[in-house]
Length: 364
Image (cartoon, rainbow, N blue to C red; front, side, top):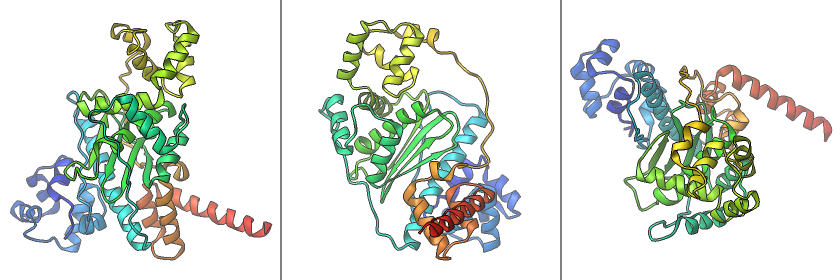
């Protein structure tokens, strides 16, 4: 029986038992039995359930990983924003099932993330140095470098179109996965990836079986989020390096253009640099409004999570999926489903791959 929590999926879809039962044309008591695992829906009923809940039939029937992404919001959100977040969380949990299914079909062994850093009793600077050493990072880190370093340590990294409120999410169980919001600029994505790496190393340790997931939400005031932010800041903007920069700049970073120059030097956003420099006493929180303007723009929910397959899909997952398609073990439609893109996009990608293979053969 699948480990998927039907009741949780229904609640995330914003439906009561009565509402979903009416949509399915069944009695609410039968739906209640499905949720308690006392009865099983027919295949036709499962298909309709999957459609109503926004998941695949396969995930509903065979989802094995009981991951539960949860977010700790710092303030109340509007109903539309909350629905976007709930939908994204459901799709991230489903993606873990796709990874597991691809690995099983490809007959590849489990490759867990084996690194951990003990933060308790250790200074943030020391923990960040340890992470930097374990990943063999340069003193000034780029998004591509950090993404590659984590990928080489068996972390599946997906850059998805996520709701604006959601920066990223991390899972650590039989394998590790990180989701980053592709809608944010590269500087913000870098900080998010460093933040999620901090969760992965320090908060999702293998012995903490009851805490396998973290979701980072803008304005979150949770202590673990603060800790992950402090580690990310030290990883990307080491205190010693910041002090050297300040000594050279003679503290003259109050002008926005000079603040932006400092941010570019460390590959981070103006906001991240501002926050970091408040720790050095160069800015205070009351000045924040002068440097950043709030945007009240609303967004529509994305129709697909991925529109650039090579850039947004975890390389190892893409490799497994593509190999299974070439071997005839999955269809192009299934591959598109796994990758979170449109069928049109996957057809274009496969066509381009065929063209490159033909050109390669002509050159040999």
